[in-house]
Length: 211
Image: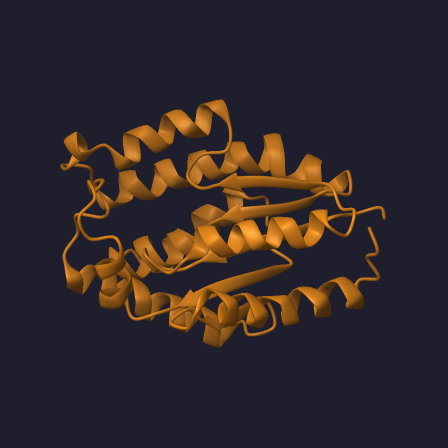
């Protein structure tokens, strides 16, 4: 095939994204695809350094606009250095978070509005995922799943922040149902996997991808 796929997973913390991302990797590799895994913020040497700044609890005074800009800078590097070259080379790129996270966390969670999407259109040169899985679970349930561990700067936010983020994700999914597939993440691992597999079968079939 001449072009690969760009697949993203989104949602608040504790949705089981990591488990299902690993399933997606196995799905494509078992069918003979080259697969590249990435995450945001991160995925390149520069982006991982920016991730450290974003998540460091010592940076509690970071302004919302600064936060947005650093996320966008990390993303710009990942897109230019990793994602676009890999997809153009026929690779399936699976990324843990992308622009939808910034819209949910900064536009809705921080209240920055439309500027977030505008800044990120430059950062990504307009790149959008072929398909996005929104792992839908009540944020309080998700946070209860990660309780007890050490929390980073963002994870320390209050419940009302994560409720706004969740509402942001719901809005994104409602506005772009062709790309964003809402997955009920409250079920068992097997139930969630089966729901995702339906969409993976559909997109590979539609695009004529046979590995």
